[in-house]
Image 1: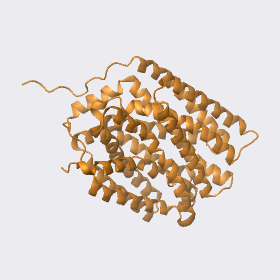
Image 2: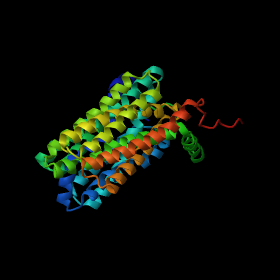
Image 3: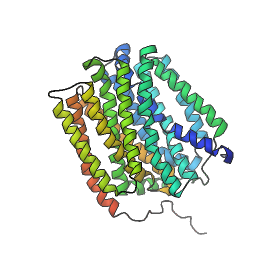
Image 4: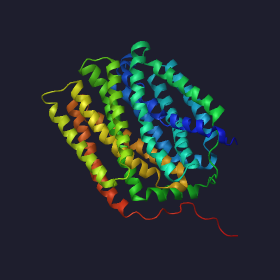
Length: 409
């Protein structure tokens, strides 16, 4: 096993931060290309959107269970292999433009990205503790928000210049480059592997899921992320087909939405010492008010400025809530860092993909008014869940020991 060298730790930490947004890059870079992809492959908008949802669902389901494997067998070698497979599948998507092949490749990519991202989140818990760990964890959602900022912006230009396949060529070369850097500068960060025992692992998952504040928190961030996803799914079609703008404009709108998520995360980090309940309640009030205004305003003014303007405000508040609850969930079980990280990210992606794709198709979100209605539905769901979360978090008991103690011989 190749142990991480001390003189490489600084650059390896930078690599870990750089790989955390990879799931967002794999999701967001081809958002401006969805209408062109649907047209080129002669499929419906829902079929094109499904390629995104299948990736997210695979990413979510695999993350929920992959943490125990990484806690037992390490992060480094598995992560390098996953980057190699992700790169290969990206090239396959670009070279074999068949929607069914794309679906299969996207499911495989979801699994590969989960191996990389869960391992990199756990990397920080492996190496750091105390205030430094809390500082790094609070940066996760801010760093993660880089993908919704940069990826659609880049994807819009790639689409305009080279077509939708260029997005996947970019992902292939991008992941290949990081695989090489990992081979040179990174190494294994896990110091004390857990034995891979099914019964013990099942007990860990059971204890985590029975912890009410953790489970409710994960569902809350899933719905918060779902607000970002439903905008990502619907906005290219609204902006390009309803408002008549180009893919580049669609990319810029997603860039502004991503900046808004990051801004919310930065504000949350600056207010880290304020009481959790007060902060989240204020943010939910702002979200609900803006969602109602978004819907009402559409009756007399619906254009790209009102669409993006209201979305930015909703996403700032959503990013604020996400940062707070995400950090709470990740730090809830430090004894099983990768498992908790995987379960948090996994359930989040499953919830967000189900909520966003379900609402996008149930409401047929193709206008500002319907997008506002979808946001109202999601905010109301979060309000109900947060009331229960706050009750359980206030009554939080000391963290239980999840791994059973070895029998005394």
